[in-house]
Amino acid sequence: MKVGICFLVMAYTFSQFYRAFLAVLAPVLEQEIGATAADLARASGLWFAAFALMQLPVGWALDRLGPRRTTAVLFGVCAAGGAALFALAQGPGAIQLAMTLIGIGCAPVLMASYFIFARQYPSAVFGTLAGLTVGISSLGNIASALPMALAVEAFGWRASVWVLAAATALIALAIARLVKDPDAPDSRAQGSLFDILKTPAIWLILPMMFVSYGPTAGIRGLWITPYISDRFDADLTQIGNATLLMSLAMVVGSLAYGPMDRLFGTRKWVILGGNLVLAGFCFALWLLPPADLKTATALFVAIGLFGSSYPMVIAHGRSFFPPHLIGRGVTLLNLFGMGGAGVVQFLSAPAYLQLAAVRGPADAYGMLFAVFGLIILVGLTVYLFSEDRTD
Image (tube, rainbow, N blue to C red; front, side):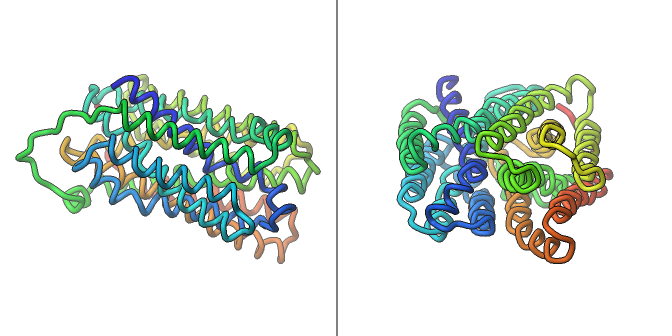
């Protein structure tokens, strides 16, 4: 089981990579196949939308078929196939279709790990294991920054993506061979997604789930590149360095959030405090725009650090689910988390264009980041009334 989990974490590392690597590829894709920032924002949004919409069928499959078959088939067929299509792309439409397929393929990976943690390990360590998984797999974010930029410069973007497609297929084969499905709970236990939705506590956590990942994912996966490129005339190496540092901060943040529920005896107030700080840094990019690239990078690092509460919010919601509904419960939470990120990706590009038309490109970036901060505050306002629970 431990070896199988290692490959699930490796697969989620690729999932983290795929959702973020467009930021580094943006300049070369625009130059070679005419994919604009709006095209790539749409492609990124489609990744998140496909990922989110797959959560409900994935939840059913985890509970009924188990994590091994669910993950191996989707990751092997859709993620590897989508990466191959990406490498063959001749225009923005193919990129968008490829990202949709990759999103479908990556949909079960993290939830398969969480499903196994919930079934096989003590409840008290779920938050730590969840944070550790996201933290380790955030190496994919790191690889999608400077290492990807260097690979593109050395081998070209098509050859680099072909290697990714082959590696994805090999990981799927390893999952099929090495992951073991956990023992099923009491077969007499019955229930459905509607039983989860009947739990009042969940309705106050879902809005926080919806906003907890979107701003950080949107900035790291899309907006950091045009911001530092337009504001500070950053080249590809500088873009790679900035995205690398933000990715490292997201790793540290995920690892740091994980054990805090046991350290402080609360999940709710850890999430509230961290996200208030996150919102503050988003507003700082608008109210106190950085004068140089180093200061801007430092602000993005802070956003990555405090914007990594995603696994902690899932741990909070999971504590209300019975064992036989773990699969559908955690995937419902993930639906809201990735759905929120997808909505942010879809709407951020037209929002920026409208702001730029009125206030100019420079001010538009800051105002867009302020909108991200406002989104977080709206989610926190609802979440403030939620029931705190630890295991």
